[in-house]
Length: 151
Length: 151
Length: 151
Length: 151
Image 1: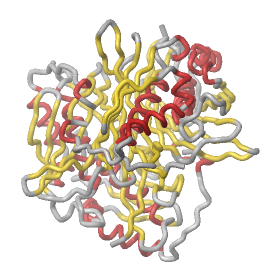
Image 2: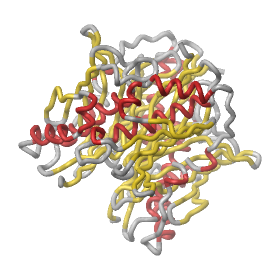
Image 3: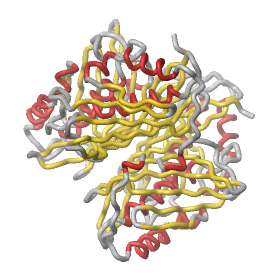
Image 4: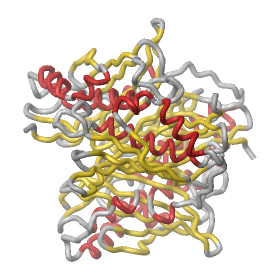
């Protein structure tokens, strides 16, 4: 939400990358839809999903639920990159606007931290459809994440 | 959002039930997650999904994306029940709050129309987890839907 | 959002009414717009504002910001009714849908608790325009509140 | 919401600046709180408000409602800059996250168009608190605006 919204982002957990990938791997639903982490740094995470035939809505576009799923997860993972060790993350709430129908080879979701608090983290995300080498924005999301202690 | 928020709901399309079921059947993603329409009347639609092993998040609960998927779709279908014949519906945006972890035999999503306009319809939805014969609210959603002309 | 979303609501603070009214009285902005608490019980609060000439938007209707202000505040106060003594409340986020233009003698906002957690409380609110003895829903809001320790 | 979310922004109304300023001037509520347009170009608008004593919440910070008011209005005005002549704009819905307590000399709100459609426009906004020459982000907002024909 604007460049001024960025905090300086410093990881408190030296193994944040490993921990985020492990959390992601535990989500059977991400595997089911074919989603993969395609970018990961302190404060931002990218997740991609191929536009396969069983992920569609009634007009043949990618279902909004799949788009929301990967942007929300990218945001949750981005929040987790800045949390202390042994943290886990849950989505408190999010809001998504769909900007355009989503079709193409794949959808790329990018989540980043707008504001990291001790317990609550606010993230901003977007989804882009990749088709013929071009990116088209298809959704914008803002989410509130909460830190919980990992089991 | 409260009882006073209800409009008197009259269908303009005598075949709304058939049309909504047809639209739902076209969503390959709903089939993939095992979602079914379990209630349908003018202005409100219920969709249920079993809590299967490949729909989970990292703590073993049902993934929020699956919950959002069926509440959003229940809302979209509820909006469609009140639209004129040859209408189709798209989600402009929604906002979801997760109220509690979702586990049990299945999740039931209920969507209903708060306000039906000529083009825009505002819907309210909720998701409940069913376990051992009890219902527990797990999410609350508000969505804006737009009417488009069916292809 | 819907009747099943209601918790059984028990106050932990025997002086919640006094504390909520005190908090409300500290908000100079509520005074500026002429807002008053017109209903208060454990888990729900009503706030009303007269439609005065300096609260309007560009079509001569009540400004959406005023509506949002009183529904958000009604929600925050409703959250506070269920918190332990010495709690204060802040809005984490909210989402509002405007359902119809707001005009009439006054606007009534009702907020109620959907889910009270130890720190986070989710509330649902609505605004109604009162004109000629009739109520018309003009907005629906969902908010996340956080408990903080009162200074 | 990310740099890729920007459209190329071309005004269709050669007198958009005059029309937006006129619309803003009609909002008596903006005058009441002391808000002014402090920046205006095709696709983005800035509105500022001084932190005066009658705009406060219960901890003495600027009331969230005032922040929401100017970010929402900045977004609505930014949407209007890209609309055809004789258009007016209404807020369909917005969602705001409060990132930090707001205090200082004044609050600056910036709204910009994420996606301009024929009828619906999605905007992103932020609010910054200015204190001692420094800017601090205090809120992030996403809104859906609808074009209506000016009376």
